[in-house]
Structures are given as structure tokens and as C-alpha cells.
Length: 253
Figure (tube, rainbow, N blue to C red):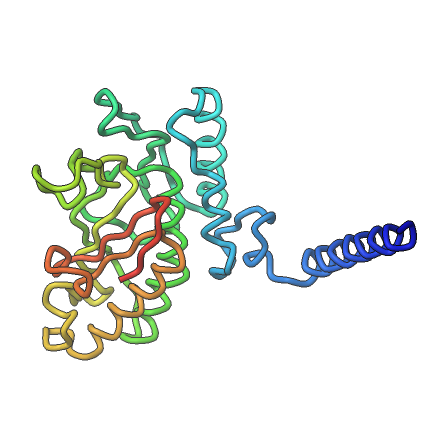
């Protein structure tokens, strides 16, 4: 009996040593973007832990004001250190349904402008946009069209409404009601050409097959950064835009 107990503790000790060694090796040699305990760096490629690293800046709705301020300040600092111009925006609370915490506005710097300008979104959502812009959107445009994206055309971010935008639909607020979503209608390229989800998703629009390829690339890349990504393949309500959000749930379609 004593021998069995000793063997059991030896096994536990060896397992603990093995886990410690594995952690140390991962910490030394694995890419930081693949390690959830590493801090987020907006200059790194998207890794398996990038989305989890962004979640470090998500604050629960029940958070105390001082916690919200500290986390939002850290999020804003991360963006500024990455060359993004950002300002704190006014939070919203209509009594519980449409609640926006940690609101910011991207005003310029090293990002692709959003149109219309002045959009308000939660700071972690802004971080997701910057990562997607740098690591997905612009590389895809250079690969497919040989030029950069000059502007991202959107249908907005904040809107106090239910899921699906219908009065008789889900009683739950949309992620737009939390400024935690962005609807991308298309892009304007550096030479002035437009690529539209509505016109070009099928590959038969003005941008041709290249437009469809580009849109699918940026949709697939968005699924690595955002929690929910909905495209025309999801339903007809998304026939003219890509819905990107940072909700706790996950869906890529």
C-alpha cells in the first residue's frame, strides 16, 4: 500500500516537472501570438492566442467604474503605441438594454479609415479592427489587386436595436447595441475602384472573380480575429455586408 502511494506521488511529481518543462520551452520558443499569457502586440501576425489576448481588454458589464477605466486606458495605450490615433468616446446606458462600455473613436494614424468617420465602438472591438486591417485586409488587397485599400465602407457600428434588427425578433440586444460590432459593406481601393459585398460576392460584379476572392479572404481572416463573422452565405439579411463582432459566442459563416 505504501509502495503504491509512493509510486503515485512520484508519478505526480514527474508529471508536474514535465508540464513545467513544456511551459518553459513554449515560453522561450513558441511565437508570442500563440501563447495566451503573453501580452498582445499589434505588430505581430495573428496567432492561435490572438483573440484570447484581445479578450484581456474586455470588461464585464458588472465591472466597477475604476476597473473599467483602468482596462480601457490600457486598451487605448495599446492602440496609441501601435501608431493609431484614438480618443475616448462617451459611454451609453439607456437603462440596461443598450449599454456601451469603454467606448472609443478611431481618428487616424496607422489604420485604414472607416467611412462614415467618427464611428464609436468598444475599445477591444477597435483593437480587433486594427489587427484585421493590418494582418488581413491590406495584405489581401495587395495580393489580389496589387494595391492597398484606401477606405473601408461600412453601415456603422453602434445601433440601439435587437438581434436581426426586427421588433418581433430576438428580445436580446444586438452586439451593435453595445458598439461591439461593425458592418462592412465593402472597400475603396487606392485607385478609386470599389469592391462591394452586394455587387461582388458572387464574382459577377464590377470587380469580377478577383473581387469575390478578395471578399472571401477578408471574411476568412476576420474569423481568426472576431468572435462572430456573418456574410451573404449566412442569410439574405447579410447579402450586402460582412457583420463582424466581438461577442462571447463564436460563429463564422
